[in-house]
Image (cartoon, rainbow, N blue to C red; front, side):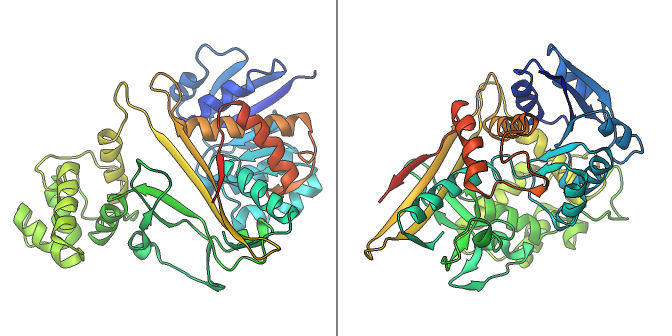
Length: 411
């Protein structure tokens, strides 16, 4: 087979399983690009037919690097995908991303079609693996003459809009299976998926995120006291302690813990003294009341993120969990009703890939290989996502072969 040259933009944890999957095919050669060369070198270390380069997606060199490859996988932040696609259109190079199709990306569909390339998106885990099984269940129900009463955020036929500030307050207990205590809240804009999934009869369509109980309440408190703020603050200076930063962020009268907590009580609404205690304990664990001096990273959000990156990093022997579930309320032709669930419970390997990096990276690698092979319908052009059964089934069969599988039940 002819050599296929693949450019991977980004070298995070998802890149390794994606690269490893694609290197199983002897016809593939890969270039892994990152702003920091040493980071890209860690991804390709010990891997044949893989090279690391330093590349900033905002640089003028992007065009020439994309032009030298048959396909580019964009694993950089989604805000750069449109720029990558524009370069790929000029070079007539195929594109794969794991991100939702944004308006800016969708607007490039006609140009991508004219260039004769496919821009395949939403081939990670969420979005990605979720589509594969949603389309399967929906298709099978329709084949049997059934329809979906409930399946994102469309509720009882009406579009419901929730602001980012109020989103965490929407979290509700959600039972997936015994042994887990999850809450769920709406995830992004769910309204297009009634059409995308081909279920016009559905009155309620909600795509949500699962979190352990207590997580959304803690995040809501961080929002209320100003830490989830991406704007640069002129008063944020090197040498300030966490407590001093907290004082200025909230308007507390002093950096003393008692005054900081008094201000938090004004800004946050706690449903109970028990939850108040848990949230204050969480803020204390983050160090936000301490005299320690953090390394600043531009904004309050970036500074807090760096702190959480240290506190929440996996220790030796620890592993992550990916949990995903579809729940469909189905009405059959005879008027009977059932609930159908499809559930993924995927643990990471303490000595290998995390569950999340495997689910995203391997799925992305599988979709990429199908594009490279020209496997129908991956030989289409334009800006696409896996919203049809043929495309979803082709990816799903390969994903299941890698141990990423949802278990279906009907009640």
